[in-house]
Image: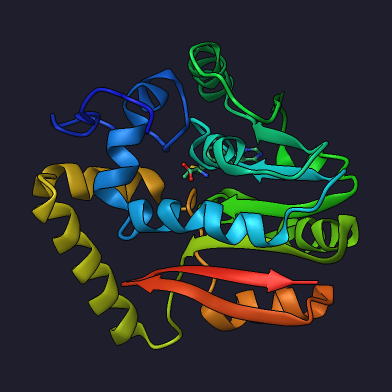
Length: 244
Ligand SMILES: C[S@@+](CC[C@H](N)C(=O)[O-])C[C@H]1O[C@@H](n2cnc3c(N)ncnc32)[C@H](O)[C@@H]1O
């Protein structure tokens, strides 16, 4: 795990809550932020190399899209046994990429990780066997999501797979509210104050834009994926495994 300071970004009252961005302040506390905010994050990362190594093939590329501090890339690089594979860790936050670059300097990995400071929608995917989109699609402009998933599908080798993790919303407004409340209780239990929770909620409005479960399934089916499974679900956070 990357070591970062405790997330106190929204701990004091802000006169105007700015839109959430993955800047240097966020990168500096990101590991703590995601572990205390995303239910099931650690469990998913435990599962990730097990799933990845089922699909990774020799002479192929792996893409970690919205890699942040590189948890997924590093765990794959530490465990993959296939020959001649390359991991592309992509993020359009220079702060995240710089921190990941520093992190990699201190690690000895079996597999090369190439960092791309780029929008994931601009990546020219090639010859991929496994693609990770963990908690990233929700930050991408809605109008670009279908094209991104279609491009990932096209680049995948036969029987390659994509792992997608997201915070979802529910058609039923009451159900959505209950799940949001439970998630906020989860954050309270992890030592976030009511003020931190409400200011972060405001900062993320129109920045983290959730799809429903059905929207995710339809998008994956329309792209052509033959098998789509729910890998994990924890409150309103879900991970899908879609196989070509
Ligand atoms: C919630 S974090 C992802 C966490 C990470 N995948 C993990 O498992 O630790 C979302 C990341 O996606 C990146 N991001 C958001 N939109 C992006 C885009 N259009 N292109 C590239 N990266 C993007 C952000 O900079 C951020 O680092």
